[in-house]
Image 1 (cartoon, rainbow, N blue to C red):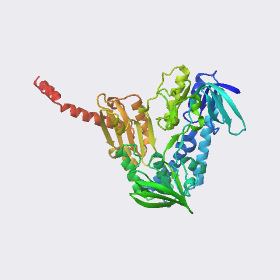
Image 2 (image 1 turned 90 degrees about the horizontal axis):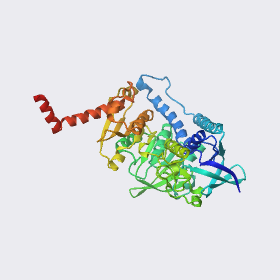
Image 3 (image 1 turned 60 degrees about the vertical axis):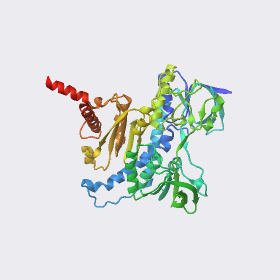
Image 4 (image 1 turned 135 degrees about the horizontal axis):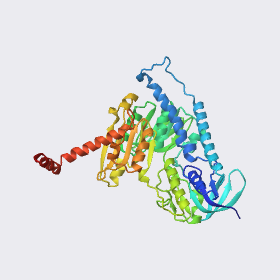
Length: 491
């Protein structure tokens, strides 16, 4: 029996779902909306198990790194030793997460037309859900006019052999337990693995970084990756193991990770093991086949409007096949869906080529729009410009070692289609890159922009002028221009 009917149901209370409910509720005060979230708390993977708690640890590691550089700035401490108090970091993490989760929930409740249901949802049909409430022995069917699936992704941990395989941590396990081991083997070479390795090594943890391939961060431009690779290799707390195929993980007073490297068998020992081996769309529990929705093992299939093949059901965020796995991109997708719902017409669409993101490594890597590799693979005729921060006033003042800014420019129009930054504070300036790409600004637009000095952001203007100067030199050397100059002199 259907006990409740909603105009809109959102399955998932993270950044892919909650903003849809919030925006739609404000636009349609007379509509009844439900956010169905198995945890009963709003925030999702990013808040509880991902970008927020990892950055709380990252800022502590960053301050330790800065402390170690103080003498370079003429600051000498009588006692340069420090003590890491992990319990304080844990408490800080809990306080920030609680504050943000409560704020999100209160903002939703204040709108009056949103219900937050702590339940597990499965589809009965294209307009009906079965809810099993987590804290109650209760199940009920609800109906809806529209639904948004925003259940995110979950960590993918391979099924290794061995007595210790069942005790491997994922990032969710780490942040749930919040134990700081003395040593940790991290399996993986992607963004999560690199962030964990650099952050935890900065907090004093001895790291074995076991990577299956011959390098790390294989989806990024190699010139930037080489900088991170050099940092990792110079870090005495990280042992980098490349071309390693893990075969077995055993436990006996600690973990023993066995791997094959170039045909030979090796092992490394640590107190704990963490697998950062990718993520998979989280939708198997929804029983999508009951409503005829199309999906495959990589996620739910949507069009550019984030609409599924079922006309009243949308999907957003990590659960969507091919969707960039970032919280901020999910919020962008949420706005797209809310607009389409409000106007009852799919006119608003997503443009992933304008996405931006930050890898909080040491130094940061940040990208807005297309990377150089992605642009070349797409066949776009581009010119590439690089600004070396070694000549930059702010960079020299900060005492940094390596950093670059890169523009990917469409040759014909001079439109900047990609901005990449590798820099300790790349996260603080990539927002300008995002605006440049989203608004299709050109090199000429940046030249006419006045940036303050000395700041990192002025590098955008410097690089634009550098590239335009090179373009003008090339044009002046062309035979046509040379001939016109000769005629001008004769006249």
